[in-house]
Image: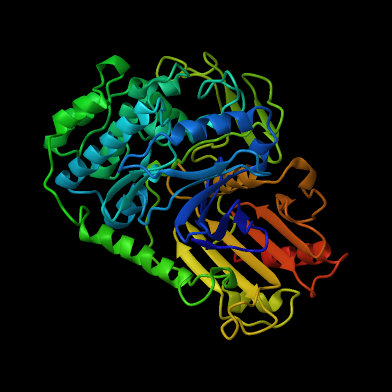
Length: 530
């Protein structure tokens, strides 16, 4: 959970937005409160989609189809508005970690738990397919482990992001899906069917049982090649599940079992009130505790910050961390079969036949990820507020709501400036926020600067709000919500991103942007380098 700041929206339709839950290639997800008090996960799409011809009609069509899915193992759609300035969709909020987070924190699941998980996912896919939908992006991050069972999220809506007439991968500038969990036909830009979700299911179950995806490799291209040509790595999959998983991972879609057949192959499981290992239920309880802190003791709109979660033990980023690769079409594409440098980043356009992978091309891709290639980590860690804040050109402050979250490979420091004690007055809003996000390279398949570059460009504002005048950093942009007496500047320098948000009487008209630039420059210089 990330506290709302001055650059974030406070409502979507009738829903009050309470905190940010996460972000992805399609938009941001917020925890919202309906007028009747129900909690919802509210996904608000990025500006670039809202401005694209045809997106709203596709979004409206996919929302209508998704409303038909209401099984016990999915998060049902509650409301949506395709005509809002930024289209949004609200679905039932599910408290619990993703499968990816749970396995990273607690380790692979026992065999019987994986079988229980499999039956829940099979039932969810059956409901999704009955509604004439294909999930297209079934992966550990889209599988939530709730207190009473599994939930599948984000079904169907990803298709709204595809231009009319495009397959999942063939439209220049677009890649929809997560390579370690794609089906071969998705990787080869062939027609997608429900059998593709069954293949992804086999990869997800392998990850749940072993902690690794069956086709993961050191780069995206190698992973995609493995998906199309290689046999899956099922080492560590329990014998009782290996045959079922192997059938799901058949290269030929017609050889894969249907969800109904899978239910018969898996057999029944023993009823349980606590379906997951104790470590996973502790994660669920921890999240509920943080929700209680957020929602308790006063009106929700009076709070602007949430105490940070308990600092986890450092964990290496798993192979599945090659999350959904979404290359935007904001910039004109480079010439085919060549490399082009745009905005300080190298983008490779690979066409079928231009690059042979394991003896065959695997479709057309525009990828913003370069595997282990990239510059070394320039910055070693995010500074502590106590060390960095006194150097910034800002007045003295109350430090009670500072956040320091160190969860390798990402470390975040969040410092806030108030005109009054925020503990004594919960309604107090900060007039300045400075946030450092430092990412470390994590293994052969992740370069920190490349990842920060990709994420920065994904979240960047329209080209008109780019700032090319700075004499520091690699790139910068102003948040679209920036107005007079309220401005938010984002600056990336290598593996570091600094965000400065200013508002209130201390930053009046005419000086807000110049102050933000000066603060950001000092914040970058105060970050430890190695």
